[in-house]
Length: 191
Image 1 (cartoon, rainbow, N blue to C red):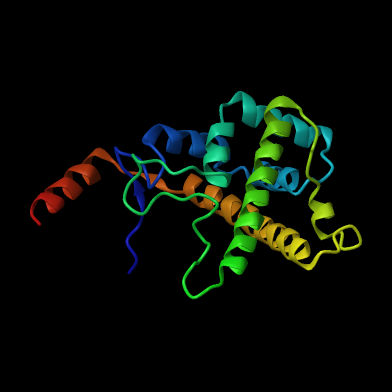
Image 2: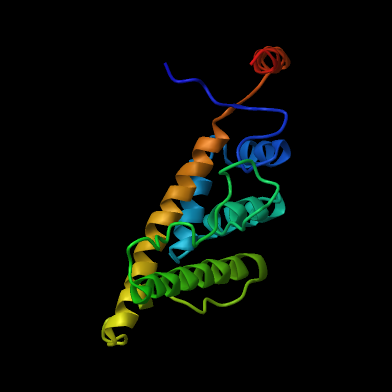
């Protein structure tokens, strides 16, 4: 039987208790908001209702949480093995420098794309990088450039969906009660 995960006094994973409360308050039972965020990061056309949802997200202080999920930075205060950035998934073992560099370029573009989308969301700036342009193979004729743009696009699609699922999962985690905390601490001190 799998142990049920709970939000402790310290929080949950890379998120503090306050951040977890914010995640729960904004995203719990709100699949339309999660779908709207996904659509926004895929650069879909936003309806007025969707624009209002994104405005609500911004007014409730949810953008820092969203940024922490989609474009994380290494935090030396995070629990063991709970930090990541866009470069974590690049394997260097038994790979040529040229291939690793191509992956680095793709991840740099991924980070730039996400950062630009946050600029659009936070400051109303224009999109500098269009998702559809990443696979415009008539425009990108250099094989290495094609590889970089396609790898970036594919990583973006997977990353955005994975992070939206993570947010949904985090919003559904229960908070640890005082009794559960007491029992856990007693059990931990007995080890």
